[in-house]
Length: 412
Image (cartoon, rainbow, N blue to C red; front, side, top):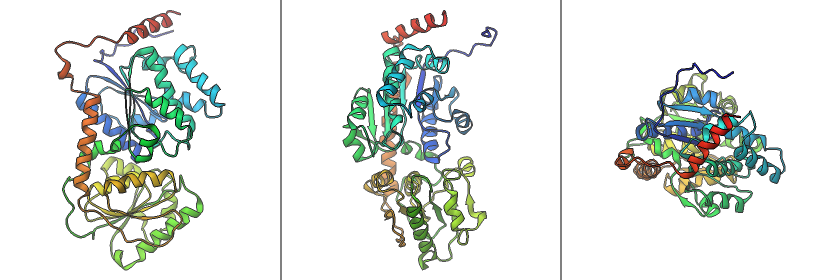
């Protein structure tokens, strides 16, 4: 029996629905989600904000307090995961039926909530590609939701390479109201506009980000992070050897070396193999960096395979070396930052030789410009309510239909 005595939650001004890969945890994905939630806390503090992600329980802890009306769910992600082993046409039909017709106790309440949203927004990240082909059905689910609710569809800062079904991806994103991607191959694949990675939205939250040119020598701490996921054992062996050679070279002699974790477990394997050079007390686990903040500063040297550590450390003025761990997925990601002007050096996947770290001292200024560009995109998607305060907007016809459908469903 439904509990009709529960206190009613005060009505929200609107409902916004975000979709992302939060809760793994993975520092880059979590930083992106946190950046959007902080922005919406300023731009839409009275809205109900739903974050649909693979791990909503942990996400609720990661983002606690970032938006006053945040709620987390995994409705669309569970639906997509259920299709992973299906034949493509059957999987597409399954998504269509569940989202459009309801009738499944595992999804109905979540979908009824999603139908109340005025917008569905796939936030940035590299989760729509041939590595996880079933993830592309998030786009299909969003399109089916719009048919029921009239919601506006947006996608920002996506990385789409390597792509499997180019035409399907292009067709689905072409039906969205707003799409940006973060790198040149993705822009070509989707025929979409290129924009900065969504992490640029959150740069002002970094203690080490000044937005001004880096000054002084790079003689501070050395930070290392190598991942064992998204790689092969031989490539990881090469990356570890390259880092070892760099740490033992005269250029880094006498400097404090620290190891930063982006994904718990996946980033620990390399540290264990470098334990003779990096003391255990210099290991910074994910939880510590999440609570204390990203440690990037000008004057540091970074040796990392992680894309968002490259982005954030370079934005703070640090020099660095990228250790490639895959010739397609990660190469495209890091190349987008090199093209933007970080000036970092690169050790190609499989190489074992040390490469001297480098930087472009002007990149923090470039990063500030990219932040402003990302902020303008965010403000276009979620303009200040005062701009339309003169006349309250009427609900789209599709949303009125959806409301009637919800009422009929609840009377069954």
